[in-house]
Image 1 (cartoon, rainbow, N blue to C red):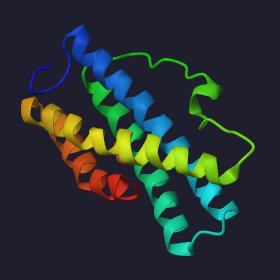
Image 2 (cartoon, rainbow, N blue to C red):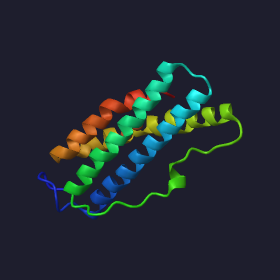
Image 3 (tube, rainbow, N blue to C red):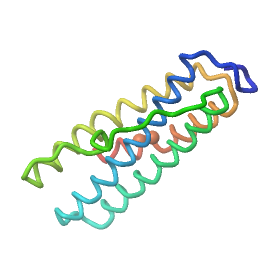
Image 4 (cartoon, protein in one colour):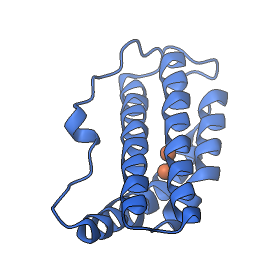
Length: 145
Ligand SMILES: [Fe+2]
Ligand SMILES: [Fe+2]
């Protein structure tokens, strides 16, 4: 992507498209996780943190879509509704533990490193701004694990 945006390579446009989808999915997972916490009788502070994460992720998706558009992306993929659900069993505690490990211990923790790597190579102001915003939020998300 040029410093003013536009004319980005297909790989850059694809990466930001993937980012939009991943952030959107993260929002869905965090919102569902908040519901699991409520059903399990978790503390209100913990539930509020999960809801805050869901809001952060939705904002990340919106901001990533801005970068995708500035890069020259014109279309975002449809997302299968089932891809936005956490795996579920009949045991609430199992589901809560699996979601904690899968989403927060692994995905959110790895995401911090991924975003640091992306940020280190970013040269376009809007991409830098969005990656810095995401990097400010992600440690709180990983801490839920
Ligand atoms: Fe995010
Ligand atoms: Fe996150």
